[in-house]
Amino acid sequence: MLKRVITICLLCLALGGGPSWATATPPQDVIQDTSTRMLDALRKNREVLDRDPSRLYELVSQIVLPNFDFELMSRWVLGRAWQQATPEQRRQFTDEFRTLLVRTYAKALLEYSNEAIRVLPQSGAADGDEITIKTEVRPKTGQPIQINYSMHLGNAAWKVYDVTVDGVSLVTNYRGTFATQIRNNGMDAVIADLRQRNAKIAR
Image (cartoon, rainbow, N blue to C red):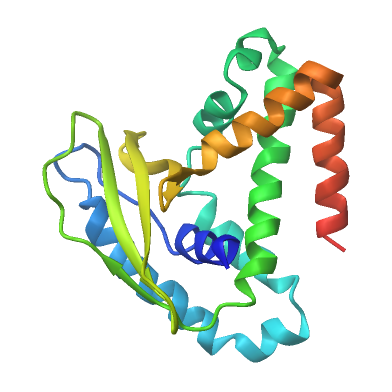
């Protein structure tokens, strides 16, 4: 259930903007507006996606890739290992990490069952070029789930670099996993493992 909720919310973002911070669309407005558009598209294409789930990868790539700063996420996930990695290792890790997220979320998104998503009122202005947008997912049964998006203004658009679900950070979770793998097996082995996992998910 938790992974499905993360999936729904991550894929409901399309963070665009104007040429400067002052003209960029407020991130909370973009989240709300694009959530509606994304979920409408899922409902309209449900039969096609049920027959050919791989078609969802295209939809996810169009919606997700422009909205997340995968390089920054990769830097934070790897921590000190990012500084020690070669430029080629950084590129390969970022590519495979992006693919892992996109394909994992695409498969989980097929389980979407019309949960209600609400952007909560913003308590304050952005802190420079960073802001946290709080949302709430209301499942058909059970308590609401709090989801916070850590965003920064980069290349004239607000982009997500971390998601926290009920106090659990996506970046922090992955950081612990990769830190152990790198310590035990090295960066190249981690990249190879990611590539293998992505190949299995794609089948």
